[in-house]
View (tube, rainbow, N blue to C red):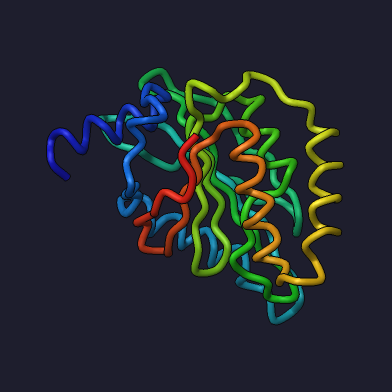
Length: 201
């Protein structure tokens, strides 16, 4: 990564990048192996119809983005451990979205988006099968949102779209809707960690 690219990447991770400067590509290849490992851990017992979400804290440490504080949750919930060491700067959180029925490509839930905003995450990542989704806070993103209102809006959009699209397609559309409403950057990509900008506020 060139010097300018590294500086831009750091500014994104630390919440200092203006919306207009968000890069067209976001390279998370350095943490992709660990994200993939946590995905595999999430589905290691799927043949027995057991899955477990995994989460980690995203931190900026020694001039790079790192995953730390790995925790295991239930089939549909995990609570990140937000404890920081002195040399670490908070970036955001990562978690997996495994499903017993094998659904993949499942982006953020309404609850995830509300938490990412309220918890002041600069980056929020979710890994589902072969896809990674990323929310990026911008200078236009509100500091607080009404989680109950977001969940209700999510239900309405699910009902509206569900007859015409697959579940993963519906969730992608809902993510775009909330990114537009709350002015979040939105990236998607493969397990290589190379993500493409889907929406810029």
